[in-house]
Length: 389
Image 1 (cartoon, rainbow, N blue to C red):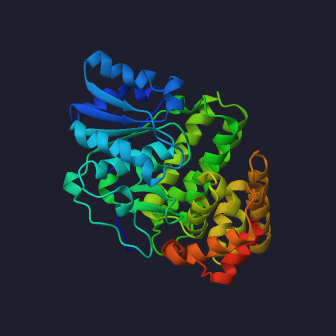
Image 2: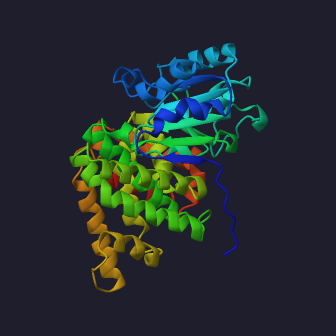
């Protein structure tokens, strides 16, 4: 019971709160660099958020060239623009890729090296960051998934080395996260599910992180799972249901808090090499590995898994093994209702790529691997990947 809790992100939660963006940015400077994807801008999702800048006469630049799962070269143009423009604050509006992009820019705007230099791999330390120079970040998520709005992480892909890694730097915690469920209403059903399962995995993996979890993070994990299990199916079936969208936005934010405090483990250790090698969307690869990792973990820490099983079936009675088995079946049923690819073979993964994924996990993602409650060697990881094939 010896632990400390500190979280620096101010969370502004609720429908229409994105209209306050200009006012929030003004607390950190006069000139904002706003990054998003062209698709989101074309859909008009930024209309209410940008209206305040125009009404108040505040200066901003809208950069709309963020790509899904950004690669290191995708940052070059934005880095040049933000370095030349003397901006005070960086804003990420969109899914995890946009928010991660903004956080990486906050470093690169005031530091001399390329974005990959600040990525922290298990076998590669990052270049040092002067926290006092990092620009403040405001995050406005449009998906309920990555939780990037409340974490100090930014994911980057390097095609030269065929690696996906993460910048892990406390100074890129967003100063403010504006979580507006109205922005998620237009998210297609399949992406509602994909991002929602990503959030579910964040809470689940953080709950089984033996090194970093605390009683406080455990509470956050279980509450995140409760909200996601209750609201994701409805949000998937009816994206206009604001109760479900709000519940998912809250659950995903809680799951983001969970990974910022405890962190992911084996699932994400496998996911990063898979994303880099295969090009799978992050949330898809997370969902592919989720059940296999869980099944290979059990019966380790069965008592903790009972707590999760009870969320799915609070009235189920039986021995611990029966409750666990029913819990696994409940999670399988939960995932089965969502229509997106659930096997590596659906993406044409070859046996050579299977070996590369396992080698990469052992080679540069061993730190989260070692945080899991059960130790997995290379053969174990190979079995997990094959079970997901």
